[in-house]
Image (cartoon, rainbow, N blue to C red; front, top):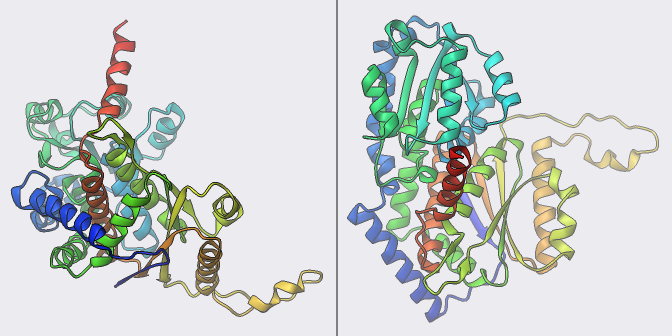
Length: 420
């Protein structure tokens, strides 16, 4: 399971109870009315798991066993969630196909990633909710040209499209008879990892996506049954502190959590950085750190810098890798011998605890999440936890959690640049 704890003060006053009750009512209505669809994905996406598994036999290329690589062409919400899950599970050795990401307009990265692939061994999955994301379509055109994808005959089975039904990309897929999965209209891109966006490529890669959905669904139900009160309390605390402590730091103690923190940064920043009904600019700036590395680069600022931050620690109870520090003594650095014989699992979690205690003693608001172990079910819980937390804080801030007008403005300006 996952353990949650906090070191910040939460009184549970009547005013706070009112804030939590009203926010809960908002998201309960979002769920029951169907206006926001991510709440339904843990259940609704089960059919996608079966569909993706069926594709293993119905798609000639997949059935042949020749496909060893999957190229994911997408950006932001169309790739970050997939990368987060893949990174966390990659070391388990359960994956049967490698995932490669084309998500940035960086020509060096595009060229480097293309060089890793062979057409005969690659399935291409193009993901864009709107169907017109310029980075995605530009890279897709490049891959068509580079790999001579003819989009007919055998090549037709080599490309899968994931997009909104009726989008330009959807119509393109229909025109060429390509395999297509649709994203529900009421599911935004950054909340879409448990939709076809994540479930299809992750299932084809070989991960247990049914367990991913089961973990997410179990936590979701417990929350709406009133059994995860800590989540409401944390949301209320962050809302109340937003004006003074405008930065929320996620300090993750495992390298494999790095892409999860990047997913969190988009989810939090794009959902909550808004102009509210009074015209005020609101939202906490999200920062993702990796321990113990960033103890040596950011901890000084956290402890003695501006008091404008709250910090959440994520640690893994059991890394399931019993690597031990050898009983070796080296001249002139014997002072570190006290750690000999300990596992790195013990060391990194002790570093996490020590860092957390140093922040508590320095008066920095802190809370923590301890994951028992890394598997699909626990990752599903973490995904839905942060999606629910984001929705709750958005409801408290009285903003539209699910739009992104600032991003759209940038797109308009970009298009105008190329119209000249």
